Length: 82
Image (cartoon, rainbow, N blue to C red; front, side, top):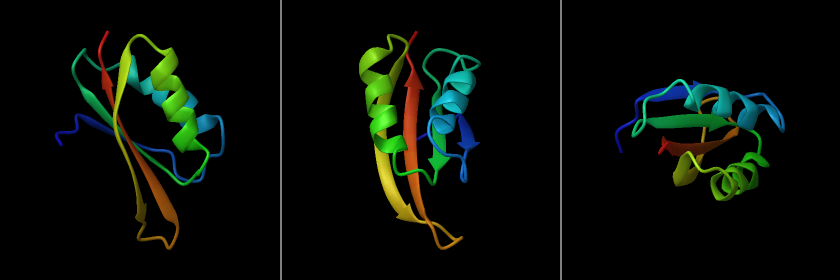
């Protein structure tokens, strides 16, 4: 998947990963993809809820992976649609 911007919010807890992602996505052009890297497990449901409620984004994919820091990383790929 092509990513236009990456946002690292590791170490931030709810609601900050979502707040930072909202701030970043509005700076992107329509059609661009934002990758968000979080260590907050709650960000999974937060991003799903945001995608359902927002008119200007599409949640393309979410992944869980082992980070090189020994923590689980939660990856969110969000596309600006409007």
